[in-house]
Image 1: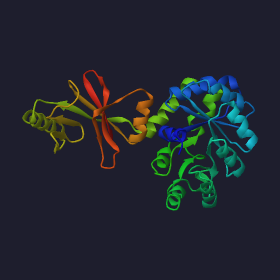
Image 2: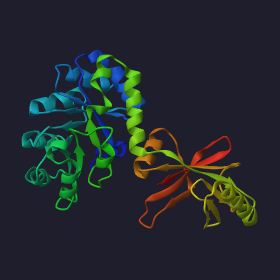
Image 3: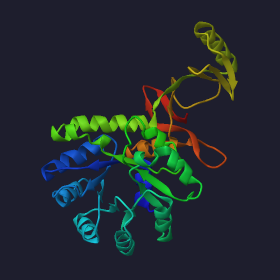
Image 4: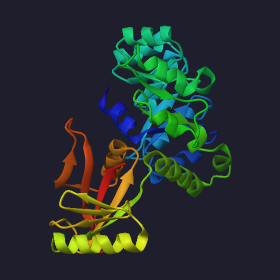
Length: 319
């Protein structure tokens, strides 16, 4: 997988862009970036497609590609306009071969094992799965994971804010695409703030960021246990010994050992640690390497941020 496709996988969401007027391209692209989704698949469904690509490429943080590409001529024109990836709606060997020869990222449309096998034979292991819902959705993708364990998919078609997590939870789904991040009504009304809000909702739905617990820092184990007993008495939570301190159920961690934060800490849980870390990195939020903890396989399970809020340290935890 190329660095660009890896970055798209980290973003996790690929909005489809269908515009009639290229004058709307810049504010729409800026809305996507402001909403936390700095990628756009500009479709060849309108005559303005190439002008839209050119305009969106002026936004430095935005990854811009072309979708609904049926011919080599369209692929050539899209790349000349500034597209850095190509998406086809179906298996198209001519477009795949042209993109491969010109070192352009290609996400070919596939829907059957035969098409996936043909794409693999051309060295491609990042495929669009379209139309996803019509061809069995997550059930089909689960079945494909066995024989095609090394292939990652971008499902589109029937993916929505309500079911996107069902797809993203699958290990063979790199990202999901669709127009649910760029609703036609909001585009028609040129409600760019509304589109940014929709994108933020999609990002939050994907990451599931939420307060996991409050951390209370104490001078030692005796004080920590005393505070834990008091909290459990008041809340009915269960006292749990953990490491150098205690938990009062799930609401508070009472630390008996030195921990970052003058007054305590806040735990932010996430349903998707790799994408949450990438999201923070794109926003310039750095981890504290001294307080980053990994599993045996090297995956980060908990990480303190360098940034503190009101004297409280913040750590991100895999839910």
